Image 1 (tube, rainbow over the protein chains, first blue to last red):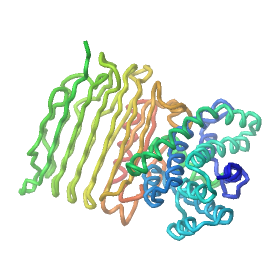
Image 2: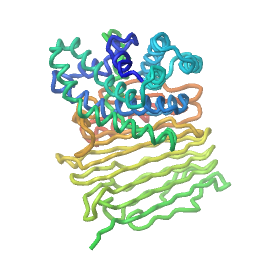
Image 3: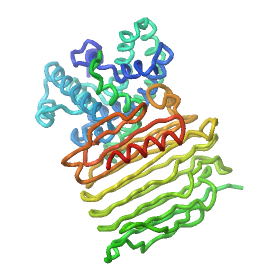
Length: 224
Length: 252
């Protein structure tokens, strides 16, 4: 494998549409729950250990060859908010386009045929990582990092937060990100033997409620 | 001396009695879990779960199992809140709920709150299997600490399968020792009461409920299957119950 492929995939400029989503940060800012770097760090930490862990495990399991349809259904069951299911499938479709163009593979073609409306983004991420020659750990890192990086950069725009402060938040989360990626890979390995019920199911009530409130707004800066 | 926790299981089996009502051929509890049949209405049998001892305490392992057959209607409540307490035995306590509603059956599972007391450590699992033509209303409420008290550690996993397909699988972990950010703006944001209401009806397959937000901190969400989830957060148990009652009434 090429380690540099991970940099290409995890780069915020990889054209997979992630910049249009705030990971729930826009709703949290509006509700007054994120007001600066401190509350952004708490927000990101909560996202990392819930949505980030689940996405990391799903992506890692996809790299390990677990059936994408089963992973997609298990992700649905872990995503009760319909607004978040729609956003995740839209992101999955966009990542699919970018991934197929970047690392053409028969497996990605098959996945695109199986999910014309898009599979959940972490499922696609895992198979794109596989097509790029990356491993389960790489995919887990990528998913876990994406679970917080989008929120941090969105808050820079939403609150005019100093970009140095936002990046500092991400840097200080690094040790926890390592642990979440480890747990995600461990869970993914368990899924290979025990099935998708072994996936983590960590949930975040305010992310779900906030996503539904956000989806009902007439005007918003971010898609989710 | 090794202190070990209490193990207790309660079982309910509800069957169509063939005369338009519901019979309870199995209604057994032991130790801290006592079951009482109370007056039902119409075809429905009603059962109260009565906590005969305090707990679960550290190291205890409680289990409740209910099975509802074709044509049977069962409603289960509890006489008081369940209070997770620290105990002499080391380690976490467990509370496992297993519910099975066969095609043509109906279950209303509406227990009182679970209160996580400072120093307690409880892992709760609720697994529900619902047949394609069955109906379910299930409420879960977690209250983090008694009034003004820091909570214990509480992890609660809720999974619901309809016609063999998982439609909901969620785990919430909070309190000391839970993964970071649990009390932050993405997860509970300082709210001390959190609840879920799951409604499964066959007609939701054709006509899913619309997603909507009911006030601050309550969302009604159609799941990927003939089911809906209400998730609510609130400052305290009373406000949470009010929010979930209003959401339930809105289902009609």
